[in-house]
Length: 416
Image (cartoon, rainbow, N blue to C red; front, side, top):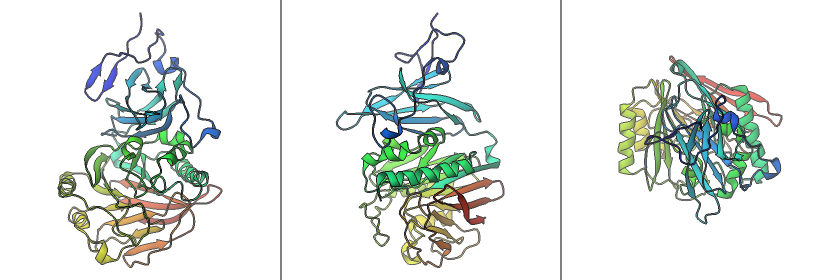
């Protein structure tokens, strides 16, 4: 008798219609179907026909029980096989119908479990990948990798992608148990969607295995961002940007994705589109209603980094101060920065908000800002990443440079 597999969708469980099935009664579906081979290196940076490209992995909502897998292909349908369950993809074409964006939202997973998966269609699947859901006890101690601004295309696409590859591989090798990775924007340079495959191909196994969460950069585009980098959790969006939040362990994470007036990365040009009144209300309520011990904001262009105190203080920073945001992790300025604990106006404050930028995970570096609210303000001339550890008693931030041989050297350390 033919095995029957269930589809799990946002509206519940339904019987399969076109998902792959097998008559084998002793093996899981994923063990019967043939995983694909990794994309050939000669194809990196391209959208290759008839195979899954640009495979991404993030949380749908609760990191303990959900995952979202996304990819692109020239095939108009797709599925994700997890163990013995087949999940059909929601598939939409690009503007000229030359390829398709696929998304699978998976729910009902078990906390703290490692799952195997493949994505694609029969005979044209991805390689076999794994992911692990959040453990029920993770609230006591977990770590997050923070990178920003690979900005592929600043130099040559291949050169930037190789730098990005070395940074993320070094970070994962040093901290393989990281719960997830935060990328605070500028995946590519100059809003060029054609550069996105370089970001994925040079780090595909890591991007498929680890959950990545993103904040929109000024060199990224709202027109295509949510297709490649699914925006997770509790979200609010309108023409001025997208805000979303989620919980992991004892920490509440909020991403503020503003829409930028231009792609000019001049530090002296402030082209941000302010949050709408509705979004300000959403942000206030989100901060006010969380009961988590730590509050972390993710954003691309920070108020405190290069701006003067007078220009940096805003109604948003006032909310951070009012609701005791512990940490803001950001990017945009391409130098290493860590502020003192400060209030909404940039003045020293006991247990105030710490703002940090981990330089860049690419090849573009800018000079220091010289702002007095910064405790660390330095340009090492090397790409960097940070590891942020959350425990019941403190937050530990460590930043590392990555040299041309892939060596990680501690550059800064701070506990609060």
